[in-house]
Amino acid sequence: MDEPLASSTGSRDALDLQLLSRVANHDRDAFRELYIAYHRRLSRFLMRLTKRYELTEEIINDTLWVVWQHAGSFRHESRVSTWIMGIAYRRMLKALRHIQPPGVHLVALDEAQQLSNDEPAIAEQHQWILHGLAQLPLEQRLVLEFAYDLGHSCEEIAAIMDCPVNTVKTRLFHARRKLRQILPELAGAARHD
Image (tube, rainbow, N blue to C red; front, side, top):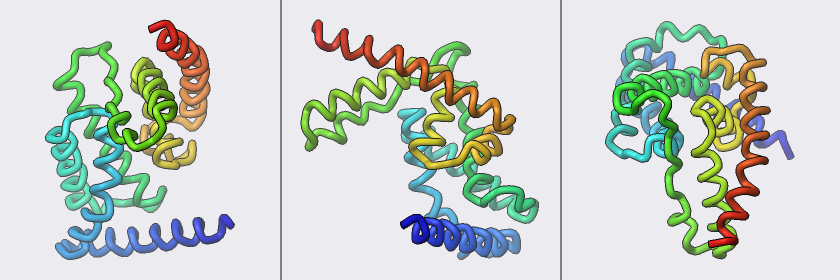
């Protein structure tokens, strides 16, 4: 059962490498294809953290402009997706430093509206998780997003965040532990309302 997923991931990686090679030669059609392939993925990740469409679009455009300019310097030390996500991560941090005072955590995107067709209990549980995530330090929240929402391995997250793998594992450990403390409190507060 894992083979189709692995083969689709492998074929995506091969296609990304081929596109990036063409982008390095300033092939606009290849860049357009790469842009389309990554826009939705980057948008989903960034919107969950910024809640601002215009800022998300600016970060995506900055990210893919860097890809256009530096495609030839890709060193094949990671997957292309990991490299692009790392650029987006650094661009997002830079943008947020300019608009957000230090020490303020990002607020989670209110995704419960997207779940309006689901059962109320599922929407409520989703809200608790989003509120819990919003209370985590940015680095811990990001490793959870990279791991569970985007499916990156600890090694890939380390490459994206430019930190040791053990740092990623430590952040995951502390984030999960904090969520185990926060979520029951949020559930209890909701029941008393």
